[in-house]
Image: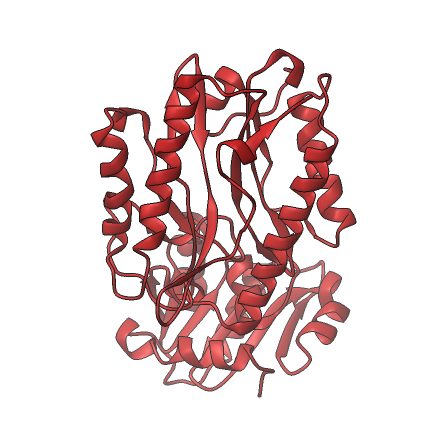
Length: 369
């Protein structure tokens, strides 16, 4: 059974790894990986891939949707009288006799499911695989990059629209709601994650939840948000200051901006992921604020907001062309303020491209109410 491009290419890339994985087929259970490999956007469904065929395993809710989104895939559909696991076992039983080793996504399958499935498919054996589809997803194709570009553009337009309407009585929660409303009105599918909108000391919490504090009470405003387009999400952070920046804020802001700049400048194929993190981290540490930068420098983005490629001190591997990652150094001073500056970076064949282009100079991030 043939599958439309680009999904045929993705499945074939996955099949090319079967020998190294020591599997004859793979059961893809993570919804995001099913979508990546097939184009199907529903839930509670599985994709069974052998060396020369593929089947969707789902239920009657999605029968028509599967015909529209995956018309060239074979489909196993269950009714309400059966469990999904029973249907999965039946589909596996239909595999050729020489298909004896079934791969599972070890990080996506519960212990209970693994035990139940092992009993249902005996004498076939189960083989644990680790992030095999996620590793394929790390390198984006042209269509994925186009969706990410659009997601970045929508996020930026939403931010600029909200920035124009800032007023003293705007609360963190209201700004978060306004960001999502504008994203949807601009053609986005929604937010890639719950926006982080935090004022003053609240901004020193890297994953602060928006509250009722208003801009009129504040000097610092940190906004971390992303838009989804075609399933792909952007992720951007800007830290703003109300009126003239204090000397202390200005120094911290300049340090974070410089740490981001030198890290982005170093990005190119072949450089170690850990080295990019080190370049930014050393800049902040030399200023005596290393203890206030407590997270990795960045992460891959795509169908998920945090994908497998990470920029951190413990990351292994190197940058490759086609990766899209965030670079987001931060300094968080408890009970004072936090500064984080984040952009989305495409690794190209010869270097990199900064996809997000919102101004981020100290004067450019001033707001006057």
